[in-house]
Length: 142
Image 1 (cartoon, rainbow, N blue to C red):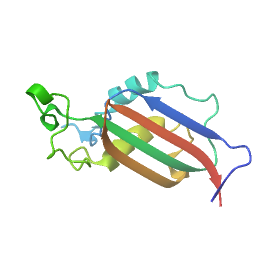
Image 2: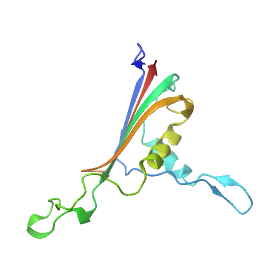
Image 3: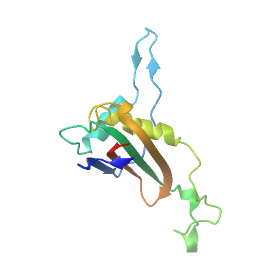
Image 4: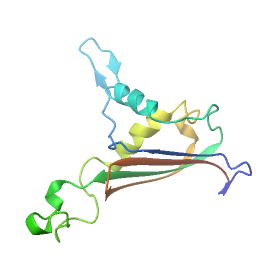
């Protein structure tokens, strides 16, 4: 796959804690609703979106960075240093696919026309200094 000559790309970076998508709920009356809708709208207010959404086939790369919990650090004289037992990889919740779905659903219809345009995706979650969400979108051709 090659990028289009026009190189239509988008880079989004926010310093917010990555959130997973909450499953849609059904009320007793049978109505379905999205419990993440309010959080999606709040996140979109932090993001600068293009005037015209991306239209071609898309490759997406997402990196979700979570700050380490206090339990990963030593105390006392060595405060601020990681414990030897602190994991290098983040193998705890939230699941990376649920986090990616939250942000791609929020961008659907705004940064790109429809999520069916996504033909290639890479998503990573990791520990870092501070919470952040980084999403790169690029129109591609085969």
